Length: 440
Ligand SMILES: O=c1ccn([C@@H]2O[C@H](COP(=O)(O)OP(=O)(O)O[C@H]3O[C@H](CO)[C@@H](O)[C@H](O)[C@H]3O)[C@@H](O)[C@H]2O)c(=O)[nH]1
Ligand SMILES: [Mn+2]
Image (cartoon, rainbow, N blue to C red; front, top):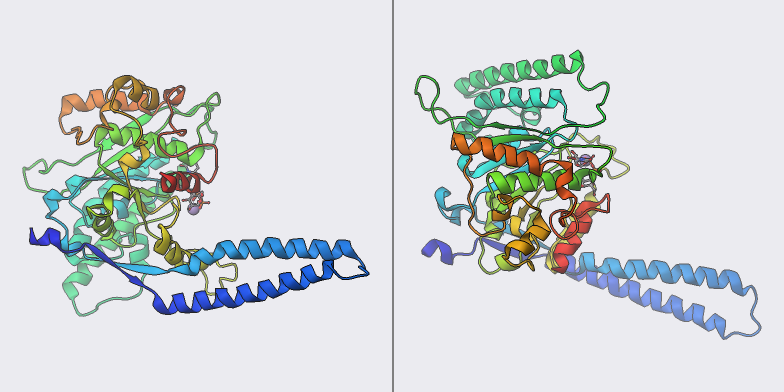
């Protein structure tokens, strides 16, 4: 009880930034007012010379001033936040998470510091490529080395590529170094396996249609000899159906397929979305996000917790600001102090229900109108529905149903992408979906 009474997070208002930003805004406002007065006074001058250029410049100045005015919001009330994951409930009371992602991030997502039985990783392979599937199997093999290593030594950089390219080393612990060496050798073997497979070919001639393939990797608790083995999160590979006759809706389409398949297979109340070119650079991110989602004061109106996109390996002379510093290091702190930042497409922990449209009632006919005809999927919006694919018999029926959900015809009538799930009709599905969630 005592644990629950302590706050899970706190925020710090950047007072100095507020004073500087608001003073700057005020000075700028005064300057703009003088400018406008000066321009207006010209209109009353007699005789007028060259009116047109003057008006054009004035219009441009008004337009830019308006744009600048809207930008004041970014600096109005910047805040930063601190979380206290140690105050979260015990592991067995934590809610489950489904990770929906592109191809590269599987290892780091499975290495998150979260109870493995409450983590399910769904991998979308839009290309339906045999190399990705082979890669996923190889990843699972390597994960048996990598995950226990990260856990035992509290490794913070859970993406092996980033970890092994980092030069910092603790030379004092020889046992650790020997283990690291062994893991690195296994990592090199894993990479070679992928490179060889890629060299052999793959999808040189793209098929005109890609067929559905769903494959679940889930280790048992014990190996063949009955010895206890390290428990790892379940991994589900999903290659959705693609046909020229149906629009695939790019990334939003892929995410909606994963949303449906995960709703059927694990229906975790929270989802983490990761792009294929991202990895989790902090294993505690899931628990950090839960500090907000499990706060009873803000949870009812909280749809998502967005982590900033950070970029690795960018050269020192980043003259085009490829790390998007102004966005993630300045503007987002400001937006956080207002009503939270918009969705940036990746690195967010979203409440599943927020994508399911709150206005839908739990009436079967209405649910079918929104979610489609799969009776199994219709259970997903119902609170506390927890499917089980541990049971072998049910798993094959569930897999058949999952294939129906991953087919392109499934979206023919229901409101996927319109009123349910990630929204279509825009290549920036993240901004579009995020704005709608903010409005709701
Ligand atoms: O047909 C598609 C196209 C993209 N993706 C996935 O979409 C993600 C983002 O694609 P990427 O090529 O990395 O796009 P970027 O331009 O880098 O994406 C930025 O801009 C997008 C649109 O605003 C956001 O969705 C992204 O999160 C954001 O990183 C990747 O994981 C892809 O696997 C698909 O699954 N299917
Ligand atoms: Mn990208």
